[in-house]
Image 1 (cartoon, rainbow, N blue to C red):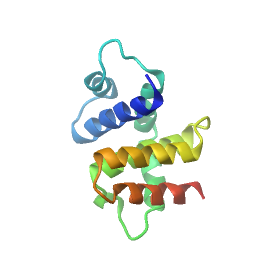
Image 2: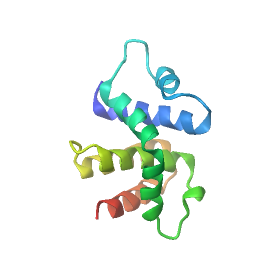
Image 3: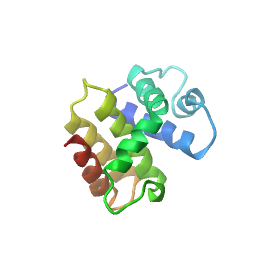
Amino acid sequence: MKRRLAREKAFQALFQMDSHEISAQEAIEHVTEEDQEDKFLNELVYGVNQYLADIDAAIEKNLERWSFSRLARVEKTLLRMAAYELLYQEEVPPQIAINEAVELAKVFGEEQSGKFINGVLSKMTK
């Protein structure tokens, strides 16, 4: 599975975990087919889940005129996933993580989601 598709599937799994009380394994099973095991997808879902409190704190610290509790689920999930890549995946260049989150925001988010995500994540890299 290509990384872009893995990110999309990870977003869907993380969104389900945030919306319903299901495990990471259940969420991954819901978004993949039986033979679609993917290491990068698993790293994203389990990594975000493992470091959720630290990731949320890093996001909140970089929000301007906005509170973490007011974030829509789509934006919150995309920010969590990209923040995990920025903070814990050294092999992923920061600009790639940001660009991928912005592209997913264009698909799953509102009209201004991409700009918002780009702003928060760019601030995190400084």
